[in-house]
Length: 343
Image (cartoon, rainbow, N blue to C red; front, side):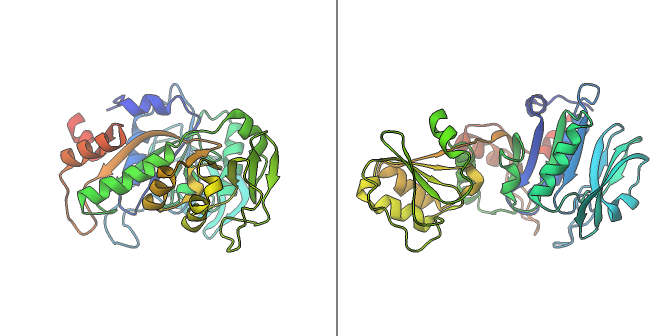
């Protein structure tokens, strides 16, 4: 049934989508399958690939059943040579790239019939971006990326325009903890964007630590990264904005928070995938007047839940969706339950 569930219409407004799971068995592949079945292919040319292996009938780690990927006629796809040979559909070969994976080169093809496929596309973020650029040459309107376990970097706005986040009992069987941990990730995804003036100055800077003074002048800090043990803040009394080009970690955030001259500073990172801090440290930073911002913000299309853990423990789906929805102020979907309602 080609049901136009609310977030499908949101996906159609984007040119790329990443589906990312917070943990293995949170329903990421089921979400991909759900989306692929409902996209109006008469309106959009769609291409799909995966980082990692997807479409296996059995999970190789937990040995639990996994939903197989079914492609519809007309969909483009990227997978490894090994898995292309195992396809259960008729397809037209489009390209065999120089992009190599452990299972051979990446093959791009178009499905001429509906059928099942194992997806194992580009193995690196850089390779994925190259494959996506190639797809634009084939007039693809929407590229869908099925992400690997906990690879939130695939949801970076530098890779894809939008994302769906999959969570569930595999992440935690304690409902309150599951809601809190998922809500924190959503809060990071939704962090506000810094000023256009800051974006113009900071976007070209791909490494290092930088700061902008109250007159708008840009300065480089001696320390190479936020991971450096000897970070010095001398002479930064006029600091208005502090920029971390790489990863933001707890130890650096704590040093900024404890420095009195940086109490009201705006701390900027490239996007939410660069943030590796605990909720406690972030709260303390914000409580003392600090403000965290990003250069690029991801568009969170939807949050989905799988209330069943790999061990068989089942959370109450309605209660989980309701509590998580209230915590993140977004609709939350149990796709297996919603799918059953459609039948």
